[in-house]
Every structure is written in structure tokens, then in C-alpha cells.
Length: 70
Image (cartoon, rainbow, N blue to C red; front, side, top):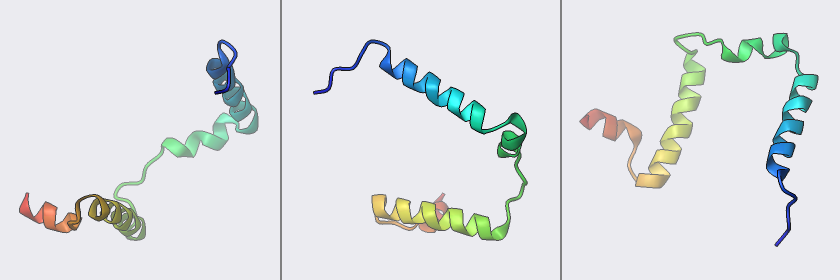
């Protein structure tokens, strides 16, 4: 097993945070918090397909079947 120096995680996170701040100005990241509701139909379909595939793999049931019973 690798021996880590004390505080290695905090140091790594701090360096990553500083790198992100240097690479991206606040203006460049401003749009990340903005949401347009409702989302476009294509985005909604893509999100549903991804969630349904994961749910079906996990439970063996379609998401629409579960939601219809609720």
C-alpha cells in the first residue's frame, strides 16, 4: 500500500481548486448555475432515456411502468 504524507488530500484538493480558479474566470462559469425551464424536449428525452436505462438495469422494470402505478 502507498504511504501518503499527512494532509495529502487537503493539499491535492487545494491545488485542484487553485488550478480551476486560474483556468476559469467567474464569468466563464456563470452560465453553469442558470437553468431554462422547462428544458428542451431533446434534452428531456436524453435524460429520460439515460435514467430509464439505468433504472431498468437495476430493477428490470421500465420507469414509465412504475410511474404509471404511482
